[in-house]
Each structure stands twice: as structure tokens, then as C-alpha cells.
Length: 118
Image 1: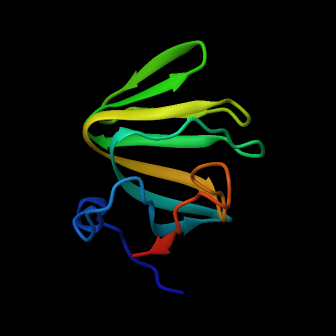
Image 2 (image 1 turned 135 degrees about the vertical axis):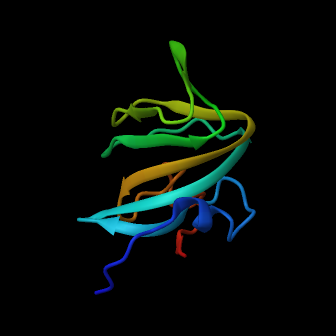
């Protein structure tokens, strides 16, 4: 086991892909990931787990079926399990995500981005 600190900004500099989460650490049975986002993602839900978003840089709008939530740098938002949502970023935005290991980012294994550790 390696015990070390993780510089999130440095990790985000190692890739350019958007909407492709990269695992930077693990916490119990959860993946801790960073991701670059821009534009609109797809509507989806996670039936068995909450979805955790922390904005590191930029701004994120979380569309829910009944409203929109605007999230800025240093703010976090948790989408409860089973709630449909659609993340949107009008500018490139950097996020920290925490999900149970193996959770597909689209809510569907067949369409999910492949998670890699960096």
C-alpha cells in the first residue's frame, strides 16, 4: 500500500478528455476521481448510490427534473440515489467525484466511460 498525498490540480493536468473520470485514490470501497467537464452530459440516475460532485474550478449546473442547482468553486452537491440528473458546464469545469467502486458514470455499464487510475 502506498501512502501519499494527491495533488488534484497536477492530476487534472495529465489528461484532456472531458466527461472521462480518472481515479486518483480510493476511500473504503469508493473511487475518488477527478474529471474535466464541458457541455451537457446525458440524463441518468444511479439507482443504488448517491452521486457526489465537488467543483474545484469553473461552474456546474445540475439539472434535475423539477429545478436547476448552480454549483461554484468550493461547493458540493449530492444527487440522491435514483434521482434523474443532467450535469451541464458552460465553461470547462474541474470536479472531484466520489462513487462506490464500479459505479458507471452514465448509470449504465454499456455506455459508461472506462475508469482508469492515474
